[in-house]
Image (cartoon, rainbow, N blue to C red; front, side, top):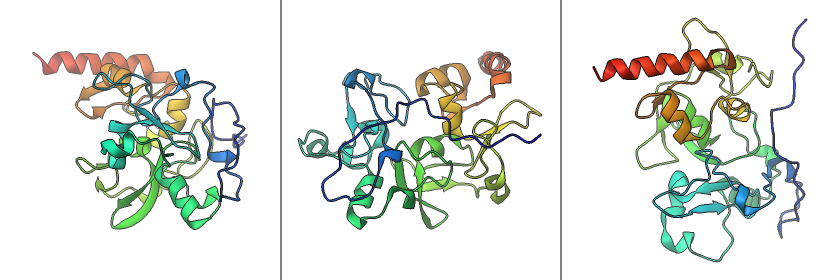
Length: 239
């Protein structure tokens, strides 16, 4: 019997928010809610850790997504913007407010998760919307140096957009493969993060990074075996 589709895996509490002045659409489906500021986690590196000795997390006024200024880049690297008392809106929310369209008109083309830091990107000369974390998890593509807008790399396999995620059971987006040889398990990187298969960027690099920005992702069945494989490869590289 075929697996029944499930809703996208989400461990967050369903939010209750007040309306943003001037925006007349229900946007609860894109809101990430934290009970207190102590729970803030960067949507890009999946960590609340300080960077460069500073607590530099910023929250979008509308969807409440949180990012480190250095993970996000763009205007948050401008001290005047970062230190301003004015409300800050992420690229998606800023766009929705400007055009007055409902949230469903702006979705990540790499996964079905409607929450998180979704930004405007340029890939293969086409303008799209995508999670920064999704781009960072797909080996074929990456952001151009010092940019979280322009994507470079290889052409994405069009057939992979038709694959089913083993975790959320949905077809669509761009599921990545388990890095264990001969394993055919596929999953969206955001689903893998929700299931704990991708931890904080720092933890994941420590356990699964073969070299800088070349880290492996394994399904639940191959997590431990994957750690040992990466550890051996690191040891061999230092001999």
